[in-house]
Amino acid sequence: MAQSAPLRSAASITTSATRITHDTLRDPVLRGTAPAGSRLTLQVDVRGTWKANQRFTVPRSGTYAVRLTYGRGAVGTFRHRLTSSAGSVGPVVTLRRAAVLNPTIRTTTRADVAKTWRPGCPVHHSALRTVEMNHWGFDGRMHRGRLVLAAGVTTSALQAFQVGIDTKFPIQRMREVSAYAGNDDRSMAANNTSAFNCRRITNGTGWSKHSYGRAIDINPVQNPYIYKKTVSPAAGKAYTDRRKVRPGMMVSSAPLTRAFTTRGWKWLSTYDYQHVEK
Image (tube, rainbow, N blue to C red; front, side, top):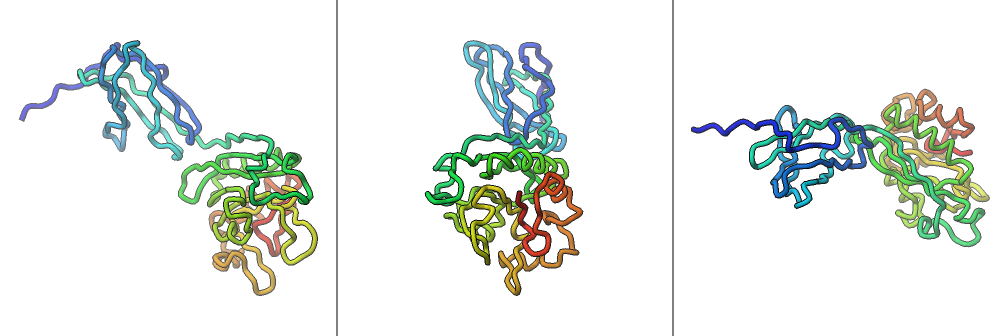
């Protein structure tokens, strides 16, 4: 059986960079030059074997732009290279997908809080901020989340969540409660980390701190609300023994817990383990 000819290095395939560091939830674009009409294959090193990831044809301009999508959400280093159908191979490009918070902040619109704000709430939605950020998931990958917070607590909250990134604190999901029709029970049952929700205090009177965007519930299943014989959400019953510390739990020794409390947030550490407020 005849062997195929080995790939040969070709200066005709160039790349804009050979080392790239990037937010793992975003895909960098690799640019370069190659002969017009060349059929190129983007390969990825998968456990020591080069495997095809994308194929494309170089346009008449002789310049190409290819988005590096492999490994999105994972944190690690991935090697890429371009090969041509003529048997040429370009330089190896090393992409380090990094764990970063990468927050964005904007003024909250009515649409952002479609099911959680209404006229008569103690704050207008324009006094709130819609914050998006990356966070670790229980699957060991990075995910994008969204919270709605009071403008005055946004900075300290993001500083705390940066500690969560640094210490790999996992969060199941992070969505505005409108995704659950404004229903706090549904949001908790989904183990959703959330902030603003214009509602009354649970088992109390007056407006909840959530109504002001000044409270965050973190991983409600791992950190349930316990009132007399009620555990909410129901799946939180598996986490009522707070001495048995597992991933995602807010306990006094957790760096994320300390990151909030040292920044002036109060953690309801005796019955509402998910809840921090300021």
